[in-house]
Image (tube, rainbow, N blue to C red; front, top):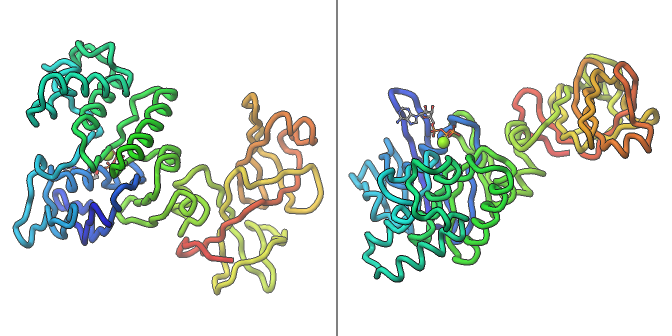
Length: 362
Ligand SMILES: Nc1ncnc2c1ncn2[C@@H]1O[C@H](COP(=O)(O)OP(=O)(O)OP(=O)(O)O)[C@@H](O)[C@H]1O
Ligand SMILES: [Mg+2]
């Protein structure tokens, strides 16, 4: 069952159309992440769902109830939508202690004092803030304030939580721990989480399903993490999901050539009518050898990064980046210097039509 349904949503600011005809549904109990570049409209969408903004057109339904529908004059106010929200700017009340900030939703709900105390302290424990319960927000770091905002959303026990980049100000260790806690909490309490981020790693780790949004506020693809990573619908999605290499390939008669050179591509070619393709691959899909089968390339740059060596390689005018573990490089003769040649093959290639940049199936 869908807990959120967004239908044909549109929103503009001063003539700038941020969202246009956006349709999306989130199932009850899932952790859904919305991933997209900065400024693409993620926060705007969350604010519309939470009810802090009204759409220009379209409808929003929560639990099958219409909560926004400008055409019908419906706009249910945020406090009765039953949603826990943590916004990017994690507004905490400056005049209230950590304890009072987190306890506020329970106070409003008129919960008895001892229950309030227990639940607030439990939640503060969960986010690692129990020892700072008496502090004011001005006495906290950015990451600590973010945890207070997260605790305040958790304590209210909403079955639906909207989280807008709630972990950005935390250090790497704490971020990983909190990511795990959010996932645990979502599973344990069977709540639905709509999580907004531009961090692919967090999205892959958390999501049951995820959506990739482009700069124009269009959703390019919805799928589980594996589908998004392994079966991107186009080069935008592929590129957004990690470091990507794109190598132009042109058809010449029956064969395919790389870049502007004459080397013949020794792999299965895609089906289709295009004469020009782009082969996409991740650094981990590249296999290097001193010589042997594959394409011939020239090492343009070799950077020693400790456990890895990062190479920039040119093949007939096309450039690619890859890295090799230092131990492997030493044992397999893969310690290349600049201007040395090497042989390149690929574990996996994605083919895109050079004009439309849509992925082409082999
Ligand atoms: N109240 C507003 N008035 C005018 N423009 C706005 C307003 N809110 C958002 N915008 C514009 O809408 C676009 C989308 O903004 P939004 O905050 O949703 O981006 P985002 O995807 O959340 O980005 P980020 O990852 O940086 O947080 C931006 O161009 C922004 O400037
Ligand atoms: Mg945002």
